[in-house]
Length: 389
Image 1 (cartoon, rainbow, N blue to C red):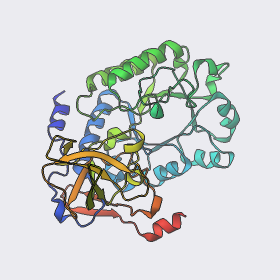
Image 2 (cartoon, rainbow, N blue to C red; image 1 turned 120 degrees about the vertical axis):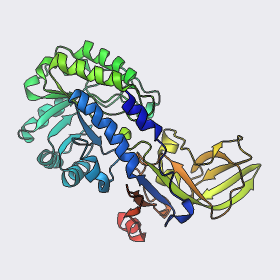
Image 3 (tube, rainbow, N blue to C red; image 1 turned 30 degrees about the horizontal axis):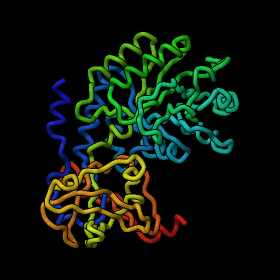
Image 4 (cartoon, rainbow, N blue to C red; image 1 turned 90 degrees about the vertical axis):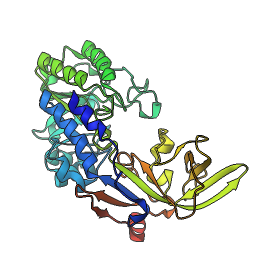
């Protein structure tokens, strides 16, 4: 499809921004044009399949961008009461809520603001089905087929707590539910979905004719260069036509990937035991924990892997955590105090995970809009730190 290839030709984002002229450091900067490019790709998938696509708030929840996103997507999927509230208040379209477990004092409030409520087990459905009124009830399925290498992010690990296995269904009353939810992927292509669907269909095909919808979850790298969109479209159309199902996708990363950066400043440089260090006014543990958890290594503009360019530095944050390091990068020139750096792909799974450990200053959030103006969406102060405690 040439449409997608044309999109990827213009993949660089924030390339028209001069770092020295930016008003504040540190700062997350979301590129509205790049965000819309991703949304157009997702809209093309919708148009060719009649599937519905939801924004996964666990990956990207900057609600100041919702007016743009809801022009293209059908709603949000939430993982908690507060995410569901945000979706209802700020997005206003469909709200699908899933949690591994619900508390009795929250389930009624969740049912008031959600269109679909997805449960993690058959016993949860039995416990709460009379408490959710006429809302559509779904069951999360674990097909016991793993495509994710990093165990921390693998929902189908051997002892996973996420979803019901075929052996767990027992005497499932399908009249109590309207759909299955299946989230098994993490940063995967359509080929991984194809393999998963084959296993899923083989195990659960007797239930599918009784359902109204199938939610294929997130983890689909739809807007990443090289993703096989033709295969995705075929898989969706084949499945929905075979079983007369409404198909949902709920990407988070695919909405926000390659749409923003984290601007930071070098605070100090020094040498220790043969290693050159540079301390930045950001923190891996506070501002981009996936760097430590995944592990994930962000690209930095005009930098390369260690040893490739003339000067290599271990970049560290300002917290007291010994391992608060982003990684080793090399540069053409020595880093100087006051020099600014731009870390790429810092929209998804960053702002939603930040915290105030050590009272480290939180980056401001900017939108570089279509007119290429830098619009301040949110600034943070000492009171934000204090009130959290």
